[in-house]
Image (cartoon, rainbow, N blue to C red; front, side):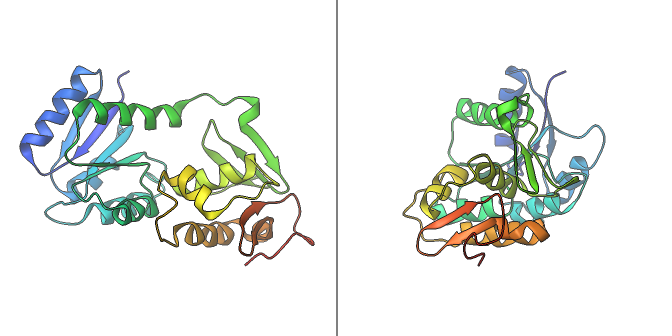
Length: 236
């Protein structure tokens, strides 16, 4: 069955061009021209496989739409690709912070857009392998299935929180600088001045609860994920 793409875009000509390109490439587009309509369609059945979300909508911002999607258990794991004319890296940081899986700036080629959509969908549906299923202390991740557990309880994480946790757990014991994490998880230049990594680490610790101490800070260096909590470094 073709993947269903919900296109939330208020510019009629651009929306039409995107839908034409998606249909040509074998996707099944659905459209919304406001944030409220987009949220309604995202929560309806059958659910879209991915949301292509413009940031400048007439009734609410795309940021607010993405936050609402991530706050709803029905749509929390739904892939979101943001589209915006705002090309500054700080705007990309904000998009990733609220849970976008990718961020595409206007103007863009339709071919590039389709390739980016395919890449996000491929990351979500790629079958897991034994190497992608890793346990470290009380935390277990499955990179292929894009899931994580604390003991036997599945963790409710945003796309970026999950991506960060999977990277740290699959490479547990290794120290990662903030710059390296910013580049690998967010795809951002290490020269960007932002507290994005620190903010996500704090959120992860809150959701890890009794295992929060496994995610350790090495002052002046970066972060690592450890097997145990005792004597394993500064958790702040």
